[in-house]
Length: 286
Image 1 (spheres, one colour):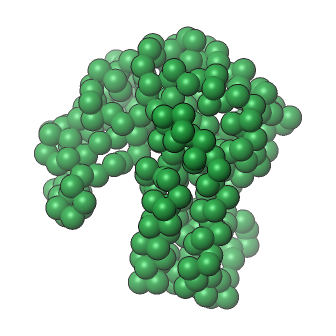
Image 2 (cartoon, one colour; image 1 turned 30 degrees about the horizontal axis):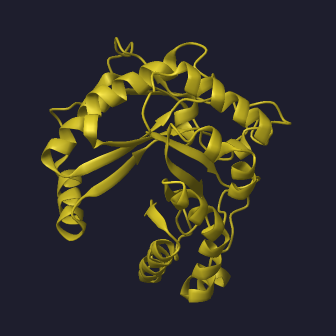
């Protein structure tokens, strides 16, 4: 829905079905759009809850720049009154709060969502910032650590509510933890997270999915997806933090027709979820 008082019943029914089977729903609001998102507290010019403008980075997703209003957070809070929904919300990272926008996002998401806010994700795939020209091309783990430190020191955060580092592709979670991420931000972190897809459908031309179908029928493939995170998960849990897969699915950029919309992918996802639970993951978000 576009307003707190206009929430689509189809969505609520879907949430209610999930709640009936699992006891509650964890929903993430964020992703590639969060890093440049702007909260307009006084509303958008055309009175829409969300406005999108063409982005300027080199990401294959052609991510728009999003301007949103407090109606978005109010709608999320209203949904949580009707079904047992809890939320992960993304903090804009690219401007490192130089304009005060990230601070507003933290302030209002905490005050409006209250205890229904599971955590605030600080940065989204920072290991691709350089490659996708969201930052300078040589953007490194050291740069990321410096900017994370600046953000935390300049945001209204005194509690353990941060989720990070949300790496996916160019850096390993072990490299970031070895750089001191967990120890340096111990007082603010609630979740240590990663993102990973077993395959990539962002490339052009698109991949022929049929030869890949057998990969999603293999338990060994699922074990191979999770096992690289065992050490990091154990490290996080030993430090009193939860470990989670913030973003995953059959393939990036919308998945594969004939695989992602098949019954086989449902069985694969179930196997994957169980393997993540075995590996000390607290959440795995599709």
